[in-house]
Length: 272
Image (cartoon, rainbow, N blue to C red):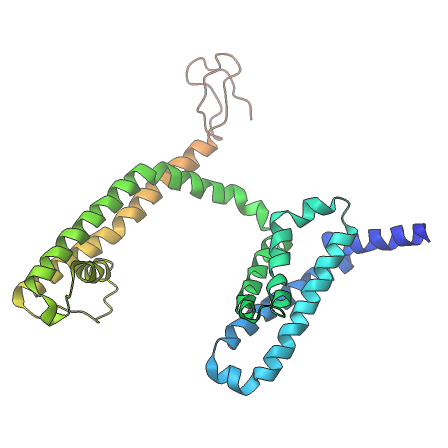
């Protein structure tokens, strides 16, 4: 019996965690469909008219997905050798959060609203689709963002100063009679304007206010390109540095790219 139990456990582990077998691939496909369907259901549930018409079906399907996720979570714990390692891992916590609020909702009804946490199951797709292989490429972006941090910080402080100054000016120029009731509210208008969003809930009425608004809009168009250029430059620089890896075996000079065949200092053939 112990051998049979071990054999079944091994088979379940191969299906749940393996992707090389037909059963493992089928399990991953079913899990992807279930996670996406659950997310669509959560989105649809937030629409009043859909909830009022199909409320019962939504509730039934919601419990159906919760049961599937619960069974999957229990099976994952049963088949892994290091149970605590899975339970306290990133995806283990995500799997738990997807089902825990629903069961806590029996004693604490207000926690049922936490069911939206089930959408975190979408993060499981990173594991299923093996997106970790793209982490090296995302590392280039993270390094570029880190290298851009001083420039971006200066840029953001500059924007902050512009917003504070223009917001204060518009509070004085327009005043409460035109919707600029306070400096913070005027700063909100400046943020909306400089970002070229333009909600339109507050707008200047005086000629001077319109002039300031026009200048701020023009500045906004120029501002949009600044962080893009900074990050693009650092990203290109980071990618170029990443390509450098050849070292001269004779004089140990470095910083040679993949296409370099000979050392520029001593002429020795470079290793691949």
